[in-house]
Amino acid sequence: MAELKATGGNWRQQLMHAEDRPAVELAIAHAPELASPLEVEHRALLPDGSVRWIQVRAVPLMDSEGNVSEWFGAASGITDRRVAQERLQQLTATLEERVQAGTDELMAMEERLRQGQKMESPGQLASGIAHDFNNMLTGVSMGLELLEMRVGQGRLEDLGRYVEMARTGADRAAALTQRLLAFFRRQTLAPSAIHVSAMVNRTLHILARSIGPSIEIETRSDQVEDVVRVDAPQLENALLNLCVNERDATPDGGRISIEAELSHVDGGLAERLVLTPGPYVRLSVRDTGTGMDASVVEKVFEPFFTTKPIG
Image (tube, rainbow, N blue to C red; front, side, top):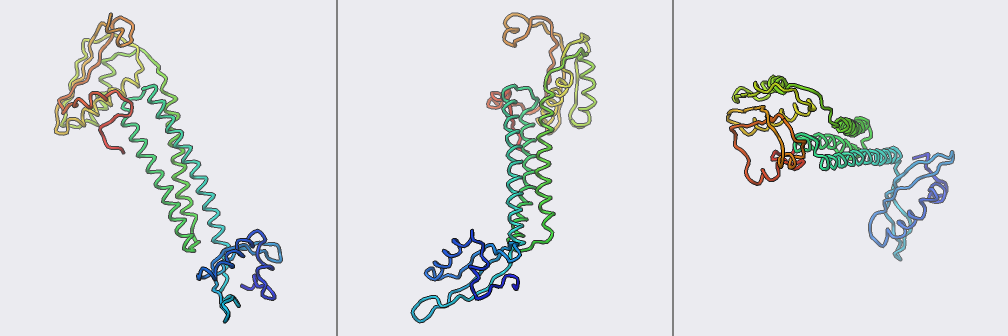
């Protein structure tokens, strides 16, 4: 290139950036003994003070005594490629920080779930989070891989679309983290007075759309007219999750029975359940499905335990 042309053939002294000179000189010194072409990249400091990146490829021409008489090769401008590589490194570092931050948040949430055991169907929740987060990380990694491949090929046009692909994946992961944080902050129980039979009837309208016609749902709650204090959304979600799980346990159809009955808790039972002795409403859900074997029963109340595949 004309703008990089040195006078007197002393391009290393006239053009090469002083900070890059030691590494280049070392590569030049070892190239003949390694019997391999010289290939180095370094910065060139131009007379106007600007800096350009160049790549030098050359082979040594030896004299009759085996010494290097001159070098034969070419220099190419690679400033655009180096700028793109630096941008890629910066983007990668930023995305890794975002992904790590999201991972840390998810781990903290998992620990809170393990300690509090406040969530319904925690196994389904954990697998759902993992599925969503893996999808988002796939977008990040794919964008970075495509960006790196095109930069390595010297195809520098239209790189913004791959940067945007990676950034979108990272932003979606960050948004998921914020939604989960907000969700966990709502887990404080807020009991209110409700009629259990009315709550069950409301839930049936939702179940009718999700359970399907092959499963019959029967309820027994007519005799329960007492008003109870409970966190209604939590109870409704628990009932929904139980019924959905029982739907999955009866793939060939069957019956789900929901029963609400008055029960008096006192003595040893109250102590074992950590309840104040007195009258309660017991809500039970039964099905005609496949049931659970002993190994599943042992783990049924463990946070994050599920027999369903991740995702």
